[in-house]
Length: 186
Ligand code: F6R
Ligand code: MN
Image (tube, rainbow, N blue to C red; front, side):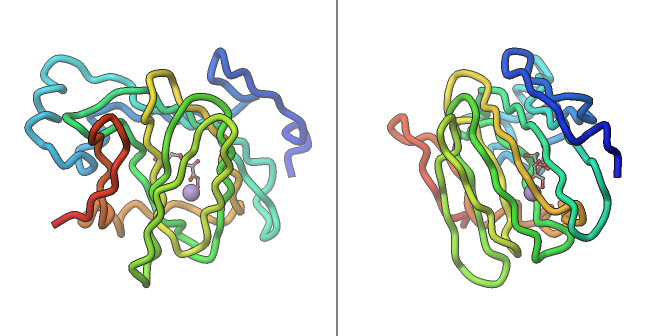
């Protein structure tokens, strides 16, 4: 256990948390995510913006330990599809997660692995989303300022991006009449 990580603080104006390990994802890292490939490639010809960062705090590695991370997801769109995270299952499938919205406006897409169950839930300042185990989850920024949230999850959850690499979720979320709308992929 790293006792120096028992207390930390976050700063939403800086989008930073304590001594968090920061991961950066640029548009070019998300090539399997956006359905409108020509808009995606067009955008990349002009710029490769930072789409999101995650800064994680990992005090312990035991079976009962928890990790948490501050996510900062910037606003933007590729065609009619919002800037989003890659999305993942937890490698240890039973692991659930709690997302706490701190600033901005967004949504979470949840898809259960072994059923057709799908949810599109608000995640912004004032929202909390419980992600059950065995559930793929992805975050989208549907607003015009950075979306900031904290996710808390079992230390042994891990990430499984591979299982989603081909399907890229069964649904996409696009803007229709100014609103986030869930559409089943054909
Ligand atoms: C951890 C978790 C979040 C995400 C973050 C970035 O289990 O769900 O901290 O890691 O929102 O999303 P991904 O990992 O899908 O790039
Ligand atoms: Mn997760």
